[in-house]
Length: 84
View 1 (spheres, rainbow, N blue to C red):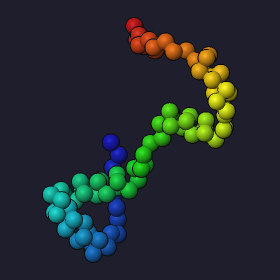
View 2: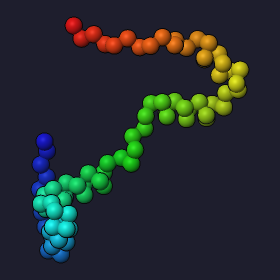
View 3: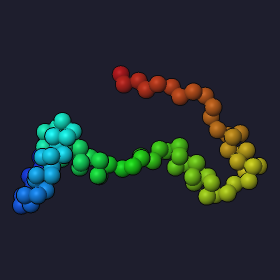
């Protein structure tokens, strides 16, 4: 796990973090971790199915063009992986 040191943190920011951590029942370190995770975490990961559906919408396929994909699509269930 990575570590981060923050230098030259203004006193008022330090105090605000300490108060916020106390309000949430966290240590300051846990509070800063939570703030950083919430700030840099993506709002929602893009799932492959959603991405492919969006590409299909942008392609503006007609029903008969889409039907070709349905005819050739392998509908058999996927086999589980064997790691032996």
